[in-house]
Each structure stands twice: as structure tokens, then as C-alpha cells.
Length: 59
Image 1 (cartoon, rainbow, N blue to C red):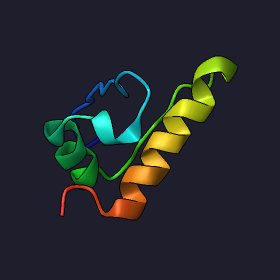
Image 2 (tube, one colour):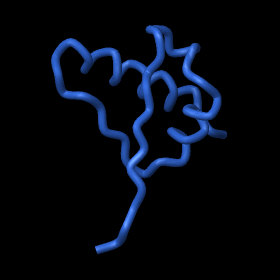
Image 3 (cartoon, rainbow, N blue to C red):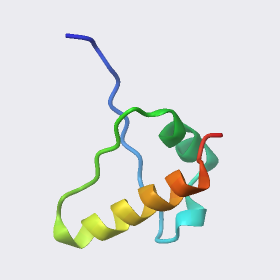
């Protein structure tokens, strides 16, 4: 089994454009992104990832 690194990235205070540059750069380099499945957090996490990936984060 190949070893990897697990990063925990907070989504910030509620707006996708407030996530740090460091977090955006890291998201742009990841092969896999996992978001919280709890109903109250799911939409926010998915919205951030979708917004950042559409903007081409890390590029």
C-alpha cells in the first residue's frame, strides 16, 4: 500500500473567496477531496470545493 498524506482544510467563515491562498494552492494539488457528510456541513463543503475547482485553484 502506498503511503499518503491526509490534510485537514477548514472552509473558513462562510465565503469561498475568504479561504487562504495556502489552502487554495493545496486543494489544487490534491488527487482526492473528501467533504463532511453531515447534512448541516455538506452543502458548504461541496460549494467551496466546486467554486475553487471551477476557478482553477492552485494554478
